[in-house]
Amino acid sequence: MDKSAHLDIFVTIFVYIIGIVAAFGYTIFIVCGGFGLSATPVALIMSFVRRPTRLRANEFLDAKAIITKRSERLLEVGKKLMDAQESGASRSEDRKTYKEFQQATYTLENDWKTVHMSFFDGGGSIILHSLKLIVGIVCGLLSLLWILHIFLYMVVPPPYGPLNPFLNKVFTLLDRLSGDFPMFGALFYLVMTFYLLICVLSGTALLANAVPFISVHPLVYRDTMMSSILFNVGLFLFASVSVNQFAVEAFAGYARSTALNSMFGSLIRHLRGIYWIFFLATYLFLAFAFIGIPITAIFWKRRRNDFDKLLESGRLDFDNMTHE
Image (cartoon, rainbow, N blue to C red; front, side):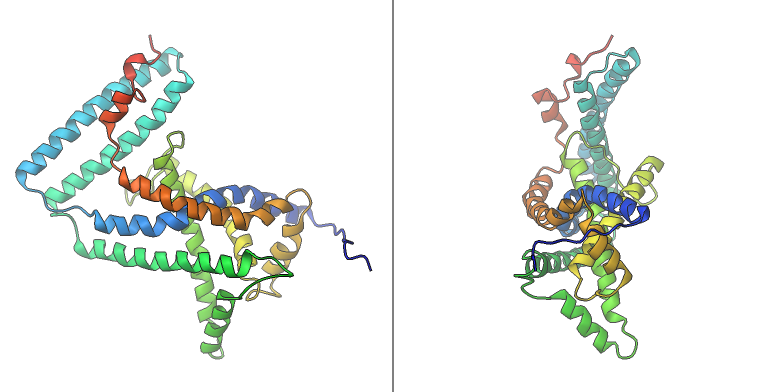
């Protein structure tokens, strides 16, 4: 028998559409989810480390003066950008300047909230900051579990792998501990899968703040614009199909003989024209997860957007912008 023989199977248009959406969503999931796997725990832990502290009156006045100066310079840039847009003379450099202006505005707003909290609220609730630390440590453990599982179960393909079932075995053991109603394994499966979606949103926020040409769409409690909500909802929906596909492959030993495994693992993974995306996804996701570590460290090192340096370097040189 020829070992290289293959079997062609026709699938419904519904299955192929899901495959196309999954392939498109993988570009979002690989980049944003990979970065988010590193950024999510670091962001939460650093939020605790750099939590606001109580300011004295003179310190508050000094900080307020600095923020006022930054806001005035931002207003000047904003007026120049508006003039360039109204005159129709906007260039690609101006559009890049607008993205940096948007990031600087978002950073300035966050800085003022921090200063306000530090003076009027004494730095905020220590319980909330401690909760961020605890959640950050838990997210760090989840990220570590994902990286270990990908190495042990997904990196080495059949017939030479997997090296170890790892989390698949953990899910099975948790189901056995649940007794007649196998619930614990399914709940842990849910946590691991939903965490990947959280990583996608967290990674997107990191890239928006670190890369000048990506728009900022933050999700802030009681302070989120409708455009940001729609952007993140769309991102969430596109990534959810890819996360399902990735989870089915990662936990194939646990979710075997299920409808999802039959559709994603058997049909969609081998669709002609897009199967190579699913083949490379594991390695690219792992690569971006490791790349995200130094990027996250650099981002937190220079998180405060030094607006004066941007002006001095010419990146926000509004005097040379195109306008009438």
